[in-house]
Image (cartoon, rainbow over all chains, first blue to last red; front, side):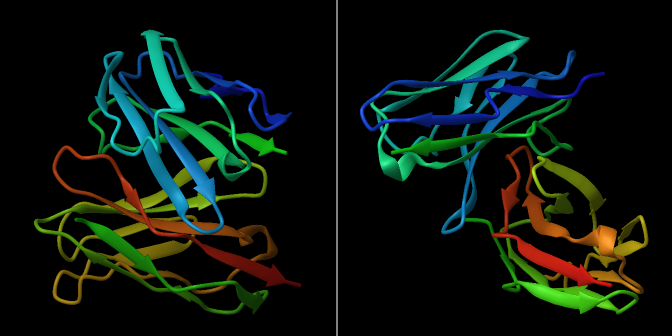
Length: 114
Length: 111
């Protein structure tokens, strides 16, 4: 299996631009998670889906952030408009059981907003 | 809510030294406990886990014991290698809730 695939690996954009991060979970996994990693806050859960349905989006910082999972093999995290404080590494992870089960992480997207 | 506290890094050790990374947790019930490791440029991967009190998780020479009385899950390794240099995250999950991670501890092992 190829594991969790995220794209792009790196994204540099200017403040105010729309950013879309993409994730392909491991085939057969029914839970998908978006995390954000920064030096100050560590690893924060933004949102998670179970069977393509958003279960908990309480970690989404504000309305500028949105996430979708149109099918079992694809999810997006969108930031519009982006701001410099959104600069971070964004990880997607998937699991085959409930939300407390072993997570498989992608390699992350390093986002820099100038 | 549930939380995890890890010792702050960075931790710098010589090869073959003994490693301890402290982790304590706060939870209302009986969580499962995990250690994840993140190598440079990669996502996190599960290192070991324990699901009930007094369980010991182990993998690749690393060990951690679930201590309910001290609400701790300290990570240990008897002899570290340069290849162990990474960031280590302690995490918990209670019931059907997503993992809650500590802030991570960076380990650097020098030859």
